[in-house]
Image (cartoon, rainbow, N blue to C red):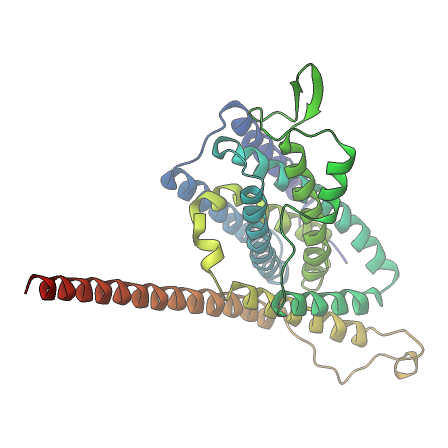
Length: 346
């Protein structure tokens, strides 16, 4: 693919993004705290605005195609990051991480996510350049992941994964935290704190989500620069979003269906693209399959926005309906109680 963005813009963007992440990390290390709703809202708004300014810059310095690809990729990765965040909530709750140090745990989880996704982007770009049929595998994986999102069944407890159980057998781990430290001394013996298990859980979660997110965005764009920056912007502000949403995440009942719809859609799109570029001899005699529809980036963007909007609105409507029914039951119970009390006085 011929680059359409100036080299100075790509290098400058990467330097700026890394600098912002470093400053964010240093702020957490120097001042661990639970941010207020106002502080969390301002940070989330700042990062969203920054992503939109970046998208506008791509439209101006590049072209409409790449600008649209960034927007679609960013929205896809943002929706997957919120799903990632939901698992983070379960992990922090399971390990009872002190509130003051949840920011530190979240930031480390986000940095690990960036590292894993960066490695997967390099590997994915290299594979796509050499083997276009890899899209068949990517597409099938996303469709399977979409099904895993919505299929009935019990989920594994966040703090009791196989890797965590093995770590408990191998590492000497205390039952109590020592601030935000990984190591502590108990009766003269050096031991790991539960914070180590938190990081192991976050890291394995990030690795699994990278397996989904990278094929998903390669279904939207083939530009490694856009793939990486969309991932960075999607992960920025994620820790503030955690405190902003609070207990709302587990009540967004239909969010997983919206994410599953996006993953399934992109999986189908990847398979269609692989058929268009087909070179496998056992499919259509090794020739391109021309009759398969070509899904445009604008249609993809519209589908992603619609899926997330419908899932979010449906969840909010369901929440309000449940809250209204709960309120009516409380009112009815109070009314019956007053009635019984009046009868008793009579």
